[in-house]
Structures are given as C-alpha cells and as structure tokens.
Length: 153
Length: 210
Image 1 (cartoon, each protein chain N blue to C red):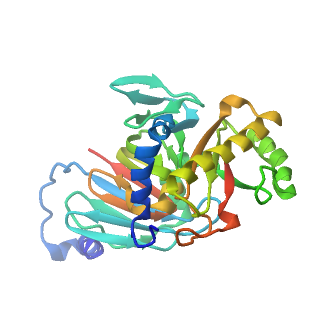
Image 2: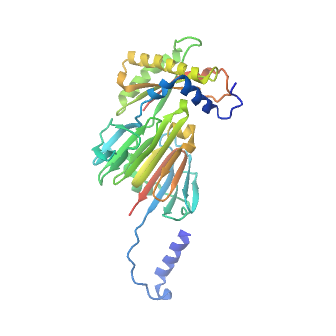
Image 3: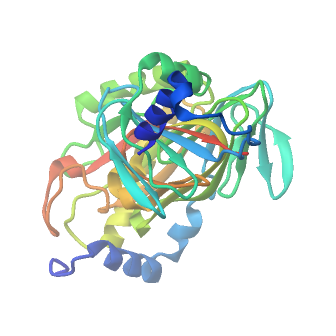
C-alpha cells in the first residue's frame, strides 16, 4: 500500500513514532567503544579530559585526542572504525545509527594529526549522511577507507 | 597548478643566475594543509571513492592510493598516487591500531517457526570463538524482516527474532553484558525488494561482532 511513496522509510518513521514510542527510547545513546589506546590518548567530554582505556564507551560530541606518543582507536556502533596517530584530534561531532527510524548520520571533525577511517553500515545505507570535515575541506565518502592528515598551524 | 609552481621554483634554484638576485627571506607563512588519501579496504582490498570539496573546487579520488593535498582557501591539488612507503611514513602509526573489521553472521529460521536452520545452529560456536579472540568485544543482534506487512509490525517482529538469538548465544556461554538487541524491521534489506514482498533471505537475525 505504500509502494507509491518514494520514501517508504519516512512512512516507517511516522508509524514507528505513533505506534512504538518506546523503541526509540530503547536505543542506547553510546556511539562506540575504544578498541586501542597507546601512550597519551584521551577522550574529552564536555570539556573534561580523561585517559582513554580499551573498552571505554564513546558518545556523540566526544573529542578523541592523542599526544606526541599516543595512538587511539575507536569502533562505532555501525562498524565504522577510526584510528588516530600521534598528535591528533578528532571530534565525533554527530553520530546517529537508527536505520529503523531512518536516522543515520556521521560527522567527524579532524582538527589535526593523522587519522585512518574505515567506513561502516552508514556508508552502505546512506553515504550522503557521512561528512569528514577538516579545517580546509569537506570529504564525502562512498567507501571504504580514507586516510586524512591535517597540518594545522 | 601546484606542480607548475614547484617546477618553476626548481628551475629558478637550478639556474639562479638567470633569475636575478634571490629575494630576502620571508618568514614562513603558517601552513594549513590537508592530505587526503583513498586507500584500499583493509580487509577486502576493495576501493571505494572520496570527494574532497573546498569553497574553491572539488576533487574525486576513485582508485587505490590516490591522494590530493589541500591548502586553505584553494581548490584541492592535482590528484597523485602515493606510494606505500609514504603512506606508511605519514599514517603508519594510525594504521597500526586500526581495529579488525566487524564480522557479520546471518541466522535464519525454519519457515514459520522459531527453530534455527541447521546451518545457523552451527554458527553459534563460531560466534562465541570470535568474541573470545577480540579485544573489548561487542555483539549486536539485529532483527530484520521482509517487506510483508506494516513497517511498525515488522519493527516489533525483528526485535522478537533478535531476542531469540541473543538468548541462544547467552545459553551457549556469551556474557550477557556484551550483547545488545535492536531491530531494523524492514528498513535494511539483504535482498532489495518492493514493498509487500515475501523474501526468506530478508527474514534474518544478523549477529555483528565488533
């Protein structure tokens, strides 16, 4: 009955929101986990910096930071993988992965340093929902593996 | 443009007599510069694509190890292939800690039952072994349906199916704190179909080990 609707997913959202408000609330807000942390590696959350340890949860808006001897890797809920070399800073500006509600987005802001990015489910379902931002450019991702270095003054 | 600039500079350096007196040294301007590289997928070797956009222009990278350098305010520089040694020099320490990719396992039910097919039963031990081998492992059970019926009903059905598999994995020894259950209903089809289409391959629970 919804065959004619080009964005069937939109209908799905409306139905979900009316019929099952509990489902959206059941989705946890965590974005992913730390999979590797070496040397000076920290997570900055609401201005507070704490050392990153393997297994730590990462949330949207967190900033990942490494010092001169640091390396840090995170895996997000949609299977996206990020890893940072020394002297790097990457903000997980936006992360939403709720395909049943058609909420998909990933925005990473690379302020400095070197990052390896391997795409996950969001890149398969909605590549336009991904934006990798640097001080000079915006990078769109069709897949799957990008390496980005930002030299900032 | 960059290449020509560098070429000119080289020519000047080599034939400095012809270029007149060298200008007094300028303090180096602060550099704001990105390097963007499209690398093959770490596991599959597959090469995707990247688009680099600045206010002044855009560049597309679509084959292995293509790169562009971007200076603030300028269009992305000419696309050039980086060799592996240079990639290792710049990105080696980031690449060294890139986690292994997620693995996906599709569990199927015998038609109209909550009994797993024999093939799917055999996957249980494989999943448990993989979880043990990973650092900080996480598991997701994601229920999927085909497009028969209303999306909201399918979202609920997907959750039911995913819960069955979660319980099964916990019974087989998986730590219950490591697994979460979600439903993608009919919004994430394995085999694309129109609405209201019965398709057995879409009625699955996908176990993801990250």
